[in-house]
Image 1 (cartoon, rainbow, N blue to C red):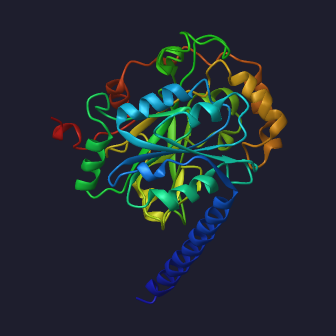
Image 2 (cartoon, rainbow, N blue to C red):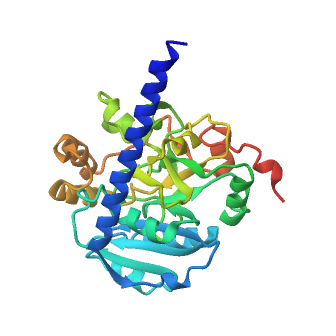
Length: 349
């Protein structure tokens, strides 16, 4: 029994620290809300039970039409979006969408925790009690049977089995040739423009005390970080959450507080229902965007450390190799073990 007491004290101290970290981050989000200028506030149209989508964007006109179309088809009722000084017409396009509320943020993306402070303010203000999708403009959420069963069915199932969130792996898509050449025109789905992906290897680890997961592997690690896999991108996310104003994202949508929410996803091989974020980062503008990021330095805590990565992407390399797999459908991803279904498919109509 005497050995249990120190462990209990450590657990209590860790829980106390995580509560204070959560409050500190929530306070950051509330302050960041003061940096947002409304350009089109249509939030009065939000109805109880609506599924909401949140995103921070900058110069995303190549991706936004398909982003909006995808999530509308899935059943999102309203989009709450922050534009960070776009110069390609993104803000005007979004302002004209009847189901979009739009704010402008003129501050630094990195200083706002890569947009999460801005989105945290909107989630606190408008997301409480709603199922909320938080995703980048280059991330399209899919899950088993997504083409037949929309998000309202999915969240009803999650509520029935007592799950407050759905985890997903970000799956990088790429063309067979150089990154500045898609395999289909801009009107085609991302999976036709960028039809290839790495099916393996991936590895997932639990990190105390937040119990957040770190999932790494895939094409970006293979090509850009073969000698430093610890610097490869984190691929696990929690993009769909039944939001509570006590929740806060810590590191993009990779992790949440309170810590119990991070237990909702263990990466590829987790048999529970999960999803995939089809990641269209490597559309033909990726080389130009990487060159711009070399100048702006807004996408990493230590931009200098990742300068070689941006330089490599700016050269529009070929990511395809003999182990690349051509995308077919969600069943393929389920068979590969990249997402799970739990008993979701057994409950289908």
